[in-house]
Image 1 (cartoon, chains in turn brown, orange):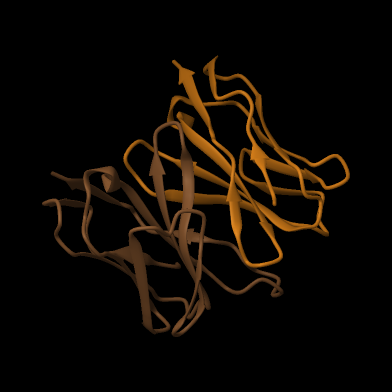
Image 2 (cartoon, rainbow over the protein chains, first blue to last red):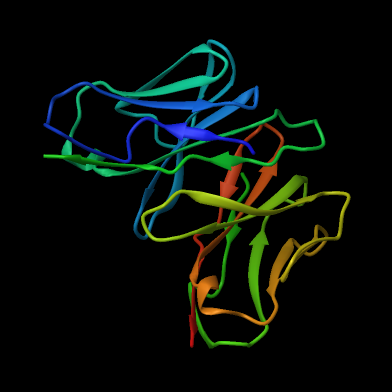
Length: 115
Length: 111
């Protein structure tokens, strides 16, 4: 079974802190994604990576950065956490588009609260 | 830009009913469409993936269809059970590797 593992289920951080959310997948997937999910707004793409050291901005990249130094790991960084970044964060991975099986798999989510 | 819509936003049915969840998308140049289930406070669980060359996929009591020409996909759940209560999301995969999600349908199956 494919596994996408997020480092924390729950996090509480203070305003202004630098926050790291980690995601690891075990299927050698090229593509990895970070979404945030908020009531009434659905899932919104923050960043996407299609290969090691490669990244693209999603719909709401402001206030976030990402790192992909190894194929299996994709990190989301909140440079200076703010209360409006309180949310559920979801990581996903899959093979690149163009191959037959591009089923996306998600981690269990990280509920981040910024106080 | 692809837009994905799910109607209704919420649905309540008695146990045992067959039901259909709807998903509409604006860009027919879609590689595939994926259906997910999400339980409260949890991540997304993949249910079915339909490639653009396919018309339907089945897994147990679930059947998903895809009609690119009309921009529609449906998820059919047979003989619904209380354990099927969850939010169901569809997502379209277009060129550019992006997954675009609908807002979801929150399903409640009453015993």
